[in-house]
Image (cartoon, rainbow, N blue to C red; front, side):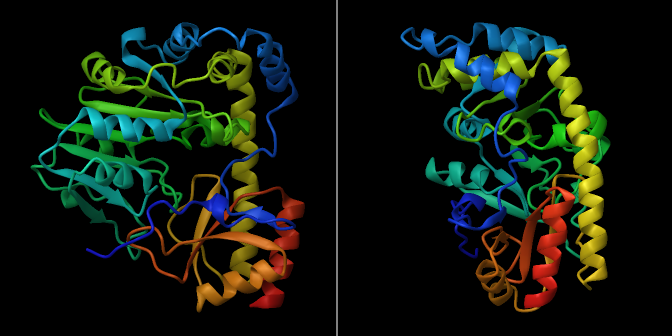
Length: 338
């Protein structure tokens, strides 16, 4: 099995003076109303944090019981908890996707099998590729870095007795209507959500797990005490309110339009986007991608290398969706250095 740098993430591409198209956080800072709520909570930091209110807010937001919710220090913490709480006989990660699930499993001393989706098939999920004996399966939806949104029925076909199916929906709130989500609850299905992408909270670490109560209890049992900060709890409550959900939907619609603008601009530059993107980023394959990425960097733009994702190579680049002015400037630089 080929080695990849599973701990490489887009933030390592960013540097002083560079326009960031490498990180998938969509806002440069949290919105003013959220900053105000966080600032108002600073005086309470002397007390140990509690996630009781956050759990209730998440449960109400998704129509789940509180026993089916675990608030985490970002969705990434959930991968470590899953790797610690379960000892699967056959763990499978569907790639290309976010590499932390595999990294967490390997750090816990567990063997991992990779299922690589086909680029020629548009990175569409083929449930038949997942071995029948797999008892812990990870899939992203929409998947980072391909931006492909898998149909809910295809995902649910992977659920079966004796298997835990983990669906990483970190970018699902960037899809208008949150279509294809499994957050409402299904037997044997664990859903991971992140608040960092939509709300500009990567530095705060805020996310949560939705799943069967017995699974959530196993994860809670291995979670470090007070791993979720007071401010992360406040953010979770705030971002689950109806007004925040309405704002998130508007942001998703705007991001969809901005993505289509980027896709059209890339096509005009002779660079087709791979798959059918539905998230706030796109994946491309270009000749001599490593050199092009370096030239873009010299021109002032950071993009995400693709060769750290199993199933991709050095000619793959992931581009975050930005506003149209930024996209226009990037496309002009792209044409100049290509």
